[in-house]
Image (cartoon, rainbow, N blue to C red; front, side, top):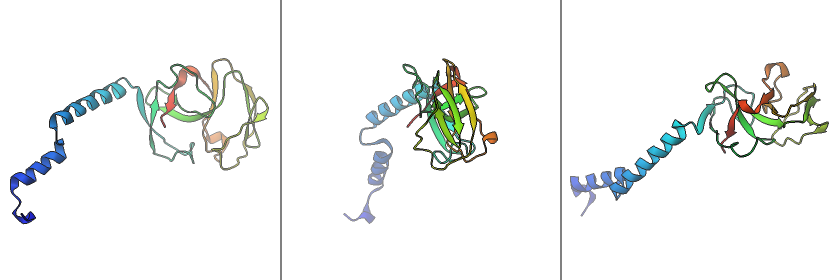
Length: 175
C-alpha cells in the first residue's frame, strides 16, 4: 500500500504512539513518578534554581546563566576549598554564587593578585588572568569560610567577597 492511501486510523495510531508510547499505562506511571519526584525535589527546596547576575564568576559562569544548588550537599560534611557555593545574602531569593578559598581557622590574604592561605600561595587552576589585588591577612574563626568570585580582573572594591559563616552557605552548585 502506498503512503498516499494511508487510512486516517493509521495516522492516528502513530500520533498516539508518539504522544503516549506503545504502552500508555506505563507512560502514565512514569509521568506520575516524575511529577512526584519533581514535586519533592523542588517543593521541599532540595534543589534551588539560581541565576548568575553579573560578571563576578566569569569565566567560569556567564552572566544570566541558570544553575541548580544542592541544599543537601553539606548534610554530612563541610564545604571544601574550591567548591562553588550559594550564599544567602538577603533571604532565600537573593543569593550569591562564590568559590570557597579559605577554610575555618586559616589565615587568608591577597598579595599581587595571588590568594595566600597561611602564607602559602593557593593553586587556582580556574584562574586564567592575573589581577593586582592586595589585602592584609585575615584569620578565620572556627565557623567562617572565605569566599570570592572567579573574576579577579574586576577592581577589588566592585567585588563582593570575604568571610561568611557556615549558616549562610545554602548549598553547593550541582555539577
